[in-house]
Length: 195
Image (cartoon, rainbow, N blue to C red; front, side, top):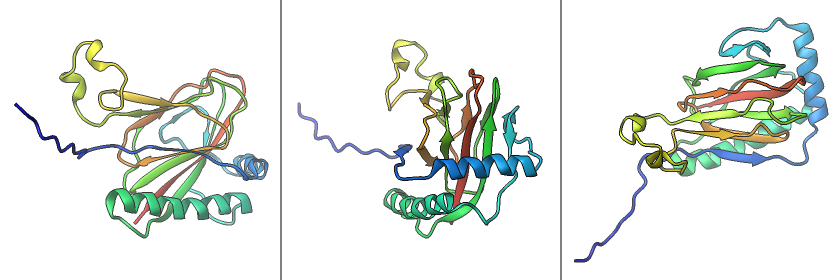
């Protein structure tokens, strides 16, 4: 007996991890802190911490450069995977999470790609990003052995909060941010791309 195999991946979930070099994090950090001083925060998925409202321009040149380059990158990867072109930055906001602050599980509706850029992560255990599987696999693979952490059968994946690192993922992926276990503040800028 012989099997001819034509492997097809129909429902993969791409997640892009991008260390960013050559960026002025200090000016972005100062912008984030000054914005917090000037504006009250909002509560959306955050529990504790400070979450800005949606921000408008002007923004520091370093953040503008990041968004410009990121728009080119997002359009390239999105077009390759989905055929969708001409994405643009829809909105962005700042998250500043201190001791024991975290974000509940959520998604980003009305957008195609979402992501987060870590501006300041001075220590470890400052609250990692956890991306969740979007189907019912846990009801079919019920034993621990069957659920070993692989790209095919993991229930979730944890991405470490790392300074100068960007994570980009489909907006429909449920995700949460773990509790910041340090006494330092973690600063990030989150964003959505829309058609």
